[in-house]
Every structure is written in C-alpha cells, then in structure tokens.
Length: 231
Image 1 (cartoon, one colour):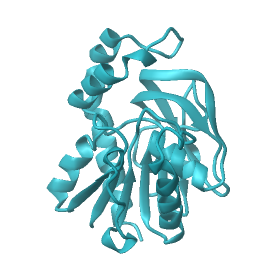
Image 2 (cartoon, one colour):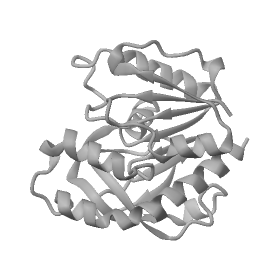
Image 3 (cartoon, rainbow, N blue to C red):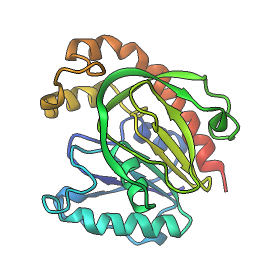
Image 4 (cartoon, one colour):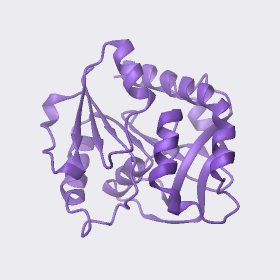
C-alpha cells in the first residue's frame, strides 16, 4: 500500500509509523507543507496520513497552505481513500466533514488514559485492543463528531478522542505514533504549551511515563495492520 503523509511542522514526523511501513513493505512519500511543497495527485497513494502540528484548523491567514490542504483532504475523503488523521490531522478531518472544531475545556498534554467505546470494540480495526490504554496527548482543541461518525475513544478531559467514518477514515486526537525522539522534539519546540492545568504534565512527568510507549506503539501497529487490510 502506497502511503503519503502531510507534515505540518519539522518536528512532527511519522514516529513509529515509518518503522511499521518499512517493516511491512509500504512505500512512503511526504509533503512538507511548511516548505510550500505541492500536494500529490490522489492516484499516487492508497493511504493518506495527516499529521499533527502547533497550528489550528482556522489558521489559514498565518499558514495559507491550510486552505489548499483542507480542500485536498475533503476530496480524498470523497474519493473513498483510506485516511488516518492524528491530532491536528483528526481536527482537519472533522472540519472538512462539516463538524465544529473548537477550544477544549482543558489542555491535555502528557500521558493520560483513553477508553475505547463499545462501538469501537465491535469494529474489526479496534476489537482486540484493551478497553483502556495509556496514550500520549498534546492538544488544546477538540471537535464534534462528523455526521455518521462512530466515537472510538474518550478520556476524562476530552469526550471525542477518536472517530471513524465509513470504515475508511480514522481520526485520533492522541499520539500513539510518538516515540522517545518525538516526545523530546515536542518538548523542545512546544514548551510554551506547558501551562498550569489539571491535565498538563511537566516535562519530568512526561519522560517518566515513557514506559507507556511500548503498549501505545503496539496498539497503533495493530490498528494500521487491520485498517490497511480492510476494503
């Protein structure tokens, strides 16, 4: 399966998705949007991965490429492509599907548990996963569910943590792809986000929770394997 990903910032890469793709023999290409690179033709990939970033879905004035990107994502959804959106990517998927994206009541930054819904556990992509999973978070916004979407996961701080539409589109607000290198990149580049809050961990707490990487990364590999095998 040919994979293409949209990258919004130099420090937010694929994480373990790159390793998984290489191990499974899936070729990977990228568009670095912040460099002004052109988005590919939809015929050039089977799976589109939309990564995270420090900007918001409405920051078109500061980042003019967002306008074209949203149009491209909307067209990809209508073309029945497999699409995975992570954090900002999930928010973009929600926005182009007509759902509202807005500031969450709390920032959620660090290691916090998510709970997979009963509806999620009835889907082949998510069925064998544990009911609760410690996931890494770094977001201040949230979204309403797109029309017809299934809520996949929730957390104490954020009701809509993940959704799936038409078995071809998955939005994950949290970061199962993050590895230790990715965590350090976020800390170094986005430390201004670490304000006081009930769901904001310190750098030391985030690094102390790094034993959670293995389970989170394994869950994403499972999701990707099943997602890419689905029609």
